[in-house]
Amino acid sequence: MSATAGTTDHLGLTWEAFLELPEALLKHAELHDGEVVEMASPARPHQLALINLIMALGSWVRERGGEMVTDPHVKIAARTGYQPDLAWYAPDRVPASGYWTRAPNLVVEILSPSTRRVDLVGKPTGYFNAGVEEMWIIDVDERSVVVFGPASSSEVFERGDTIVSPLLAGFSLPVDELIVVTE
Image 1 (spheres, rainbow, N blue to C red):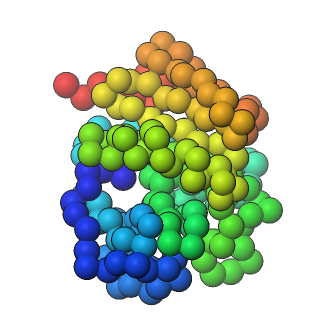
Image 2: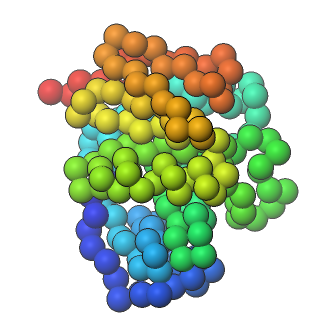
């Protein structure tokens, strides 16, 4: 998500009550310790990186199965849930119908200045505690990608590198194709 726009007067909500809020509010919102945090729309470099990742990952998902979705709500705890920019659910985590109830296998967060600290410090632990297997943090300003595994392992990919993923066997993507300079 992009910059934090503000919080609403919805305090002390449970995850279930949060999901009952109007769709317009949920579109760009997360639940942090019972408080709804509204997020601003992402900036252009953020959107371009997301589109590039979707295009690159799309053929891998079609071959391997599962579902790739943007902005899903992921339950972290009773009063906390995040909305990653992109998530991939392996075939065994895709529900037969309705809403995703299990954590995705992969989440991707694209950093924004106002969410940088939460994305880097708080979210990895929350995601892994919820059952996520791998997390990517994309920093369009630094032109880097950090791939986190559940055992506090991480690998940094920078300009000139090719991103590989322990979770996504056979997938690779040059950082320079993911994060395109728009200056």
